Amino acid sequence: MKARAPQTVIRPDYRQFRLRKLNTPEFSHIKLLLFWPVFGLAFLALERFRPHAAYHVMHCALDDAIPFSEWALIPYLLWFVYLIGALAYTFFQDVPAFRRMMRFVIVTYTAATVVYFIYPTQQLLRPEAFAHDNALTRAVAWFYTFDTNTNVCPSLHVIGSAAALFALWDSPRLRKRAWWQAASVLLALCISLSTVFMKRHSILDVLCALPVCALGWWLCYGRPGRHG
Image (tube, rainbow, N blue to C red; front, side, top):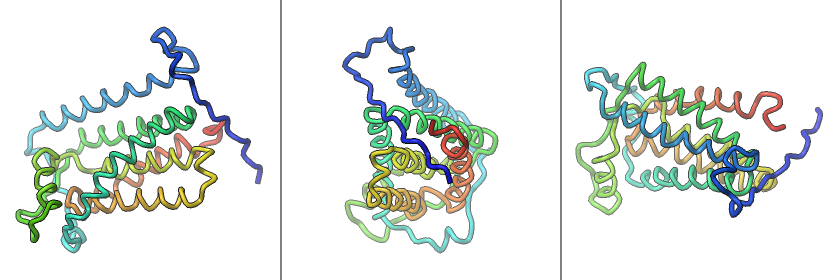
């Protein structure tokens, strides 16, 4: 098998950034960040302006066998640290990896948004009362007040975890550390599982996210020339 040529790690000097340089090769990747507000507005529109009668309930027998655990809130919230951390690391330390990560995000998040529009979904798995009264259950109850149970399939938590995982594995510096790769896989797995134990998602939402992630990986990482 032919060895892949070493990747060039590009770290732009952001102290030299000016708006007039936004279209230069050194700083054009910054424009990829514009996807996040565009996606946020699109998702907000889907959340606020779709009739509830159109939602399809995501549920299977396995969901009933999975117990609620307030401890799942911890890895669930770590998703934000994981995703933002991967974005920040690649943005400042490895621009080619950042570009591939953002392409993966754009492909998969756009695909998920289209699915939400065509086939709006919701889950009705949240417990009406908690078996324990502690800081975590109170935090979950508070979280439920603003974290909606609609547009859940495929799970963006799973897709976002995959985006961070692939980006960190893509970085030449981090790829040399087997322990870091293993820890990253474990964290992505725990985050994905936390969504069903916190009753934020049906297991169906998790499974449906996998082919979306596979498509994004193939388009952004798997095809020849993606690492050139």
